[in-house]
Length: 424
Image (cartoon, rainbow, N blue to C red; front, side):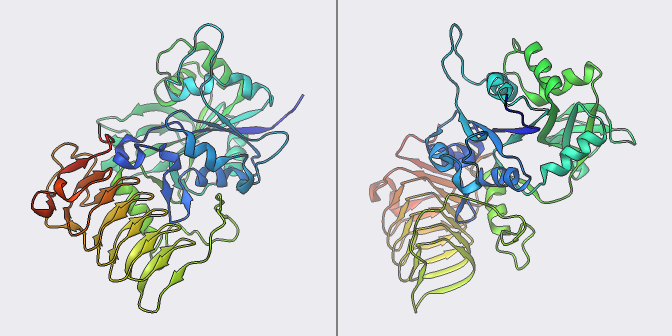
């Protein structure tokens, strides 16, 4: 029988609805990040850099691009006969077939996969955070504390603690209490959604709670293990960790990559971030082009100006176009004379000549103020913005739009123009 000391289960089925139109056609872990990567590259690279060679990736929502990106795991050296990376979508069973209804339910439905490796420990990860962590160090901590469950935690400002699952510990690191998004937090140690379980404890909890609807780690499994008297410890992490779950945090995390000394460094030799590299020609920067503080992907052609921006692979920025403080994803085209200010432009979108994005003052979005905020203009995948129109802030545009969609040539701040049915 195969024996693996620790295997990883990577939860990558989430829709990421707070990213608005960016996730209408693609799962959140497959959203582009940092010019050439996708969000899932970060936890996958952490696994291989930590010596974990068996990873189950649980997919559900819009999995096609994620599956294509992961393939057989070659970029992460996870193309192995034994172990490697396995994509685990929900599947039909005898009798009751169901979608994954919660993080723990998804893991429970893959007990047979985990059992086949007879692991001592199981690492549970989210596929939608940007960070570098050596899981081997966390495993050593788990063993040293003779724990049944270890939870990675990080200190957050006390005033923000009510947004997180909070753990309270005694002096030895043992967890004495949990608070799920508490109104009055008793500590500032927030759960990062990264867990190491001893296999026996995980299996017992999942089987016992298998009838629980929407079974979730934070709400059900961890409290169950705690009530049973199992040994739960907190592993404190103090490095860079970013939940890119909102358009604002996603934009910020990208922009931090171009700081003079980035807090999150993509250039470290000893902790590489691996991704699927398409065979693309080099970038072309014309003589007239002006660039400062940007990351530019392979195969991109720049004839205009780019300031303080992240430009993906295969993008074309034509003569006279100006891009500032923006994220432009793979294969988008910015036509001549267009001016882009603080926008997120999704893959294969096209911005017409002399169009202006990010004009005027900030007003709240009329339909989804919690999503389309931060002063951003968001253009969906394969969307077309016609020439000579102006688009305000806190807006979203999807589908192929035409001049008639813009009264007086303007989409005012706070409006949504949805020609693709992508905005629910």
